[in-house]
Length: 200
Length: 218
Image (cartoon, rainbow over all chains, first blue to last red; front, side):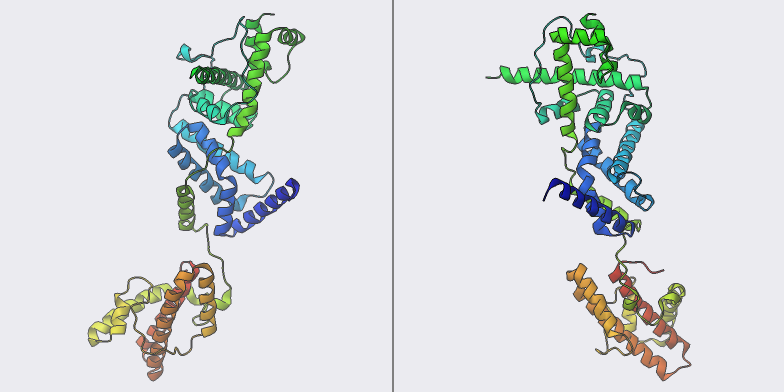
């Protein structure tokens, strides 16, 4: 089956599932859940770096979606609708927990966490690809504020104006935090690669 | 332009919009070009983290249970043909309080008569719609529609084969109860209590259908 046909088949299946779900069909709900669970859960996991919390947030995101599915009119893609809802659920939870908010000013409490600037010295470039597990670990190790912006922009594909609206910061601040997140990841990935190379 | 100036500008200008001076520095400086290349690589590779993890089965289990409790998941309606004709579905709304009154009346009747009828006593002892405790006195129900029962059991078998035997037993018992109740009512048409027993018997039959269809009584 070609990719186009498969994609078309998936879209038709999802559309049918949505209509059946509006009628309360259990299998339809399960199908929709199966189609999107990994994306939603991965988002929650990347944002919280905690599996139990990520599962709770995944539950909440899907429950909110399914409770409102009767109002879905198809103006936007279902996945977009679900994804936005998941992001809102996660951000609301993070606010409740009073995790460190992205500072409106570009200052850090702990300057040691600030990424180092690359000045003057020639620097080896990262290899052509990054091991997913290493990248995953590096992202999980980011400070929460950096991690949040990085996940929303680079992993999930939101634009800075969208992130600014969701998180409640300026576009400039979003760009700044993203840059710092990437710089921290670069340091972390280079360090881990050097450590790996140093092992006998 | 030096590296410090270029890198200070980088957060704003990473995705484009660089000046000629900045582009010139980028082309001529291996440190900054290496840095930009690394950051672009990280941004590209980040997409592979989109769907890396799978939630445990408990997540869906919780979602499904909650949706069922909230009535958002509903079992499909099998059509009016599977609903008992007597009493009519449209009249069911008033039967719930009537059924409650019948149960109370039964209690009074049995206590006053000192009935040793194990069937009625078992009926009063049941606190759930389950009719397994009712011992049928006859294997052939009177006015019930066997084709409706067959359709219901076929539907149950298609969705929950393991439950078919229990529902078949429940239907057999309640149909026998209806038969006996109707015979008592026919023997004395003026006996209001007997008439109420008949209505309750049909209510019980409707309850079996409701359970099988996984819907609550109105």
